[in-house]
Image (tube, rainbow over the protein chains, first blue to last red):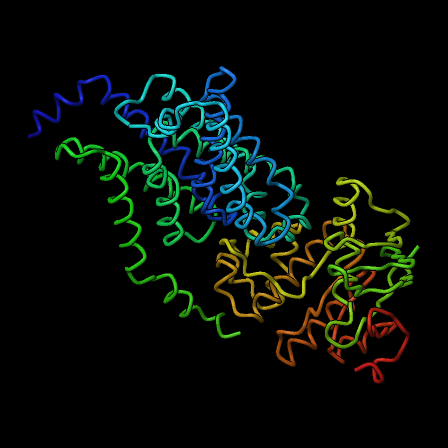
Length: 281
Length: 217
């Protein structure tokens, strides 16, 4: 069995897929941490629909559909910034954006006579069909996203904890929220294209949800999310190769299992905090 | 010249939706003076305090701190450095933040950490805020405010800063707040704190009137 795995790892598409997953595991779990912090879990669905709208427009006017999808996602993500001023503003806006985008996409497809199946197919990526430009995009995200985190760690921690506290601590909350939404939208849209809609959760949200259980601070969460993402991606991909299963579902199931186990295991930190002498105040 | 900033509000109105909750408030707090705002729940005290920091938009009127009105994002940054804030509901947050990170956000981490030690929560700085009790959290925010003062804030706007403390803690905190070399504008229902202020104002139905601590509480 190991010999056949060794042979599989000699194949260029497998090597590219593995490289994509490793690079994706460096940047995308941090995006997942931001998604949880901004409370925008439906962002994946919203961006799928906005990307479809961008693809439809691209096919209609003859531009690169995927480029149009990335631009549409980036623009709509950034345009949501003013809605972040209220606690529930963003999550509600994601639902609205989803509805408007799918309606606009279907209208454009209908009016232009473009084949809707062709547009939808562009959203279904596959890790084994990863191209070199896709790996390059993941590499860029693997540099930009941790870089932004390292440069703005203190501001991010305050913003994700409490927007008003951040504003009163000298953080330009509108500017930082704008940058985060832009980054989240582009990263999620890019990841959907590269890996397929199903795998996006395994790369972004699930490592972040698991990390939330084991870490006490933003820095700890980011570190844990990247480590969990790397372990799950590599182990899941190799497991899928050995079992000859499709990688996407295996990765999601493995990431989901790790998240579930971490949530079921008793949280020893609470016992330690309750034993702390100062907790009697 | 006394320490502290001059806070001046002229004909300030604020609304929640269509409902006006602060009605044409005029108030001048001279540098270094301590003013307590009292009044029933929903009378507009918190909204007025938040308007000074730009956390709630004043629908009309002017607010100046040391003669400066805030118009741009940079102005508001300056205002929030000049005026420290203790919020009414200290957020445990939707995301983990260590107490030490809260103290560091004051701009003077060593001073804030030292203050946390004096307030009896110095050994909790490595704990996430959501694991602290209400009283511990309030002490952390008090320590952060002291850090802000050390970092150069000339005014402190405190919204019920002793509400979660026990009686002894309320006395200690009131003494500490009253001893700060800054202008203090504090929303409170705490007699010990109001009694240490130079003026006590009562807010009712969005309007201010001068009163005494005994009459107001």
